[in-house]
Image 1 (cartoon, rainbow, N blue to C red):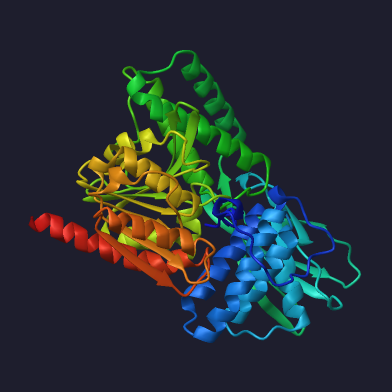
Image 2 (image 1 turned 135 degrees about the vertical axis):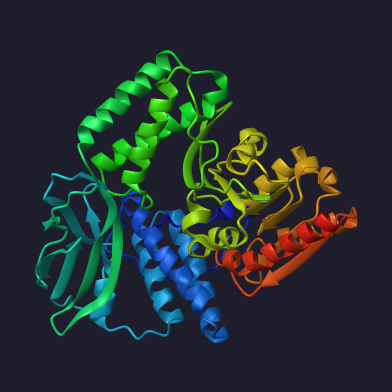
Length: 481
């Protein structure tokens, strides 16, 4: 799955970076239109960063990523996409011809992310996110759904955006599949390839209408208060499914068929007499929503009923509940949790002052009822949120790991909570992280501090393996005591 570029707010750090010049596109596209594409490119950059072991190439990438941060918050989506593409190629030591650059610049977007099985084609929009300073060659595209391939040729004079109907392979079984894209030139037809999530469901509109009716009925006569997480989740999932039916992927690839089937089962159980939850005892990834004082809070979780440990992860500004699952090292924290059979909870973060009490008080028992250890990890704005939440729930925590954050208030409540503080050497939040570590140590908090040769975004995948090794040691030590 792919998620948006989760850059963190420069205003949070209170500093301004001097960034290298970035050549912009002919005109920046609106942010919402480029959110999915930025996410796809960010994941490619993070994969290239994690695979690159050349210190010189990594060092050269850092100022370019810093420039992408500035471009993101100035709204210049095209410029950001170009920097991400070129930086990922440089990290992989890939030489780029003009045709490669044009192939990289393309976005290929299905008009809708959720189709009915009876539909034999899907509309796809081909466009560029930025202009390349070289004549455009003839481009050839292979667009495949299942085993059905539609070939497209774009001459140098072809107007963009270009719309095409892509044939869908006839299918009997509904499935979460993909639009597979291969872009090249007549002499090299496979210069770049990627895929976009696409779901195909049976009797889709009838089922969505039935879900709409069930949700409306349950809203009028809600089930018991103990099932309020189920109700909030039902409403948010219905909104997600309707959006997927009506429009292109907005942020990330969502398994629409699995989500539809799961939501139908949830509605059925909530309408039963007596009403019952379908969330308790679940295994695997869940899209949730929890009620808070400010309204429903979206959450993405990895449920592991037998897990001994739950990790709560708060993302940085500009991200969402999908950030730790789909970005930050291409989902590095999910791999680390899966390897240990630990559960993971990732709520949406907009402010450290928001109400995250259900995340701590209710969700651990839902996703990992046997867990006896709770850790919090947070990045940038999420690091500030980590400190705020930890101060309130210090007695429940086995440890905290704020990455690229700083303390905005008193730390006295955290005196007995072990902390792993980290930042990048070229991270604008480094001074705040160093001060945070010093303040924790001064009050006697068991504190580990580590710097990584990275900037503010890419420090996260570099730090996570060490953070999990630190958590492993704490769990082993506590188990022996």
